[in-house]
Image (cartoon, rainbow, N blue to C red):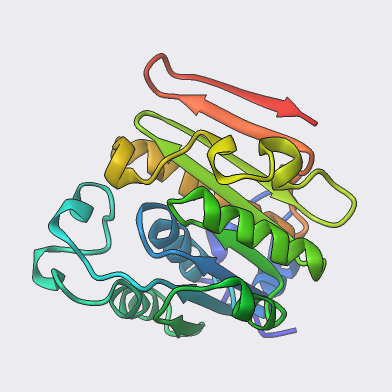
Length: 235
């Protein structure tokens, strides 16, 4: 195992069930994040800050001023620049000890299996159900654990999968409209709602890699900030 940076990760190591061994497992871990928008950007930054050894990020889009309301690692000076490159720079700035792998393009089903195979855990932070279904389908075909999240207006949801547990299609159905979640450009979103989902997704990866805590396997976390209600549904 890599030598743990005891000062940088002191607060993380102090978490019950984590310790230096858990932090060392994070340092050796590899997580791939699909999407560098509201979910993916915050999630990737948490992974970088937490010392996940290799974090891959994928996005084909450029930064638009409408993103700034919720995508906090971009700013007015980076408008028009590729999200993937800007986010990678932010990740390296917060933790020079990790490896950031940039995939500046759209991840399709044909290439996904080859990419996902090199990682321990996959996070889908995309904003469309078709990509989420693709992620689940490919991951399940190669037994690769994943977490998928969605956000709309003031509500959000997240679930995780590993072999032997209920998958995305079993919970939402095997067609894109079944999830009921639409792209932010169509349905709108409250920034903090996206932040909650992204934080849960990052936590799912950190728990899986370190062994600390219990993942959202066979469970769906849902919340609505309109009345600050949340529940976890079992499957």
